[in-house]
Length: 313
Image 1 (tube, rainbow, N blue to C red):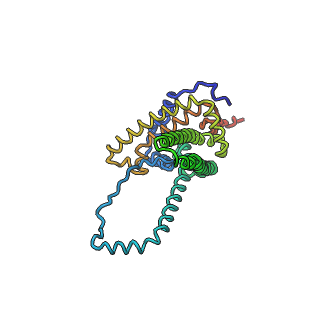
Image 2 (image 1 turned 60 degrees about the vertical axis):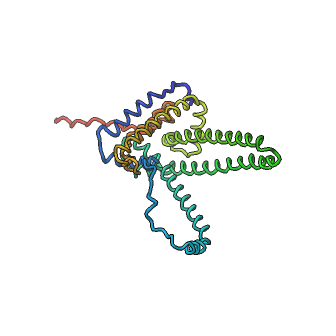
Image 3 (image 1 turned 135 degrees about the vertical axis):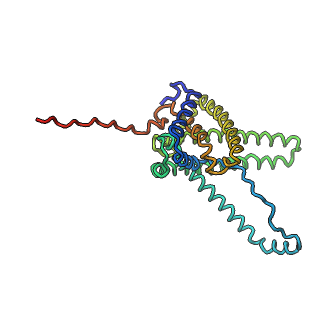
């Protein structure tokens, strides 16, 4: 499929997404539907809860005997490494579980928008294969990218450390700064490209019911062939995200920080999340039926007209 044959627009899909958001959430308004779709958005990563500050004062402190504190420290010091390892493992497990829920939740939230329904269990089961494949793919890419960039850092900076022993700092420091800038720019470019690709992999997997590797290959090729359109999409999306952040800040102040709470804030700001996700779906559908999530929904067959009763003889 040649995605560059049609005119790709930016503002028209946003208008379509705004109208779709109104249809889903306000025509008619159903609070129970808001709660269910809000939970789907919450699973997909729209937590809407940031910046929790817990009080750290008010706990009793032991100030009387410094020798007692030293004795306690010596007693717990052998266990410190074990506690650190357990804490790191728990954090990693939590990150993996949340990433898995987010991967599965992305398909649920998109299904709610596409089918205009409030459902969690049905899409959770229907797109289990695609959601798990997407999660494993993201996990693999994250691990491989960390290994690659770590090896690049070792290959570059270890020889520089040896060379720098006989070179003055005035000549060595600019070289290190330049290499850090190059690595940083390379990481940013990779993160943006992979972020956009993985974002549009979900609609493709939703339509084709394929694995994540196939979706990545197809979507990455589409982005490279239509780089200008996707750059405009990213720039406009940044403006939308800045506007959404401002609306979220105003909503947080207006609701006495209720909009900052997980799930509650998701429900309050649900029109923003639905509109932003629908914008991506309306944009990508311009590249053909393989990217049109609404084309994947089978049309309901028309009900045949009733057969009239036979005439009396």
